Length: 181
Image (spheres, rainbow, N blue to C red):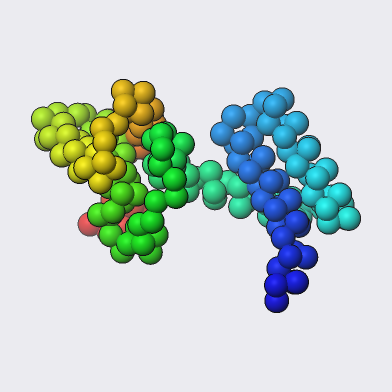
């Protein structure tokens, strides 16, 4: 089994590279993104020793769109913003059981900021953000730096603004289409 996994790994990594390049194009179309896709496709074709057909590329585009959408609904990886944090173990979060560990509290903090932006921040949201930030910093063992806080806040606020535009000015979603009263 180990030999099979080793043999398949380069092709899977090349496919992942194509999907990541497609995500990059979704998030920021342009010449740089197009060049990244071309390079990733060329790499995939050299590793797999076959041409990347339109059906497989379309499937990879669908996977990239789903991945980009999923990433928009999640906080940024803590490791990209918080200095000195490695791969934290938060089994309850990884298994989607709870949001109490370090990564789960990071997610709650991001969500509280985003919700405050979406709903029009007030005292209630400020208190929630302050409480969850305190919980996160306690679990982290130090305070967030001003730069870390700014980067997290900007990401969460952008998500809150995007959600606000989806739910309307009041931040309230109406009943789903076709739902009876």
